[in-house]
Image (cartoon, rainbow, N blue to C red):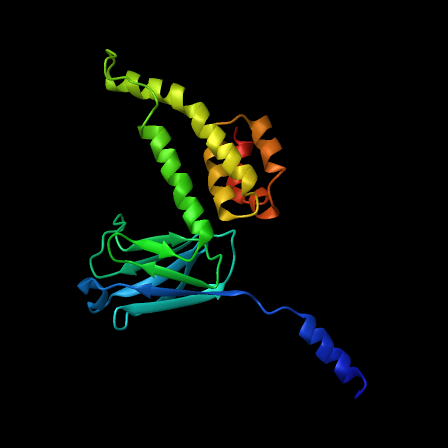
Length: 213
């Protein structure tokens, strides 16, 4: 038994420790200290943890996972379920992530969160700032929307394809694929899906959307 002990210790030493993230959060809004106010952290499967704000600070921790988008938000009495204030979405991809829930909400220390936000900003520019002067065109709102879609959609799809293929192992790639799945034909989607990691290939919502094409 004594001879086996060093081997067991060696095996234990070779088992890497789980990588963890810590959210260091701040919020100074008076609503955060109202009776019944709580800060929640939620994930794809629902609530993960909740804490009270203390001296304008709160903290969460968990396993680093670049495939997930998590949400931190302040719940306070009489908050409307559609209210998006005091809400931050982030990818838990680094050891220390800063979240300030005061307006404007900011997330720092997470490269993938920055990339997700950049992708969303590029999409908005493509949707609402077309590289085409349409002011002099005699079109109603519906015709204008249709023309913008025709002009901009190929650019949006190209951006999303590139984003997905460069991020097939993380949450940004998942976001880009969800946009593609609404616009592309089944054959191309299946080809793209084959290039993704298992967490994308096995996503039940994605499989259902493709099967219904």
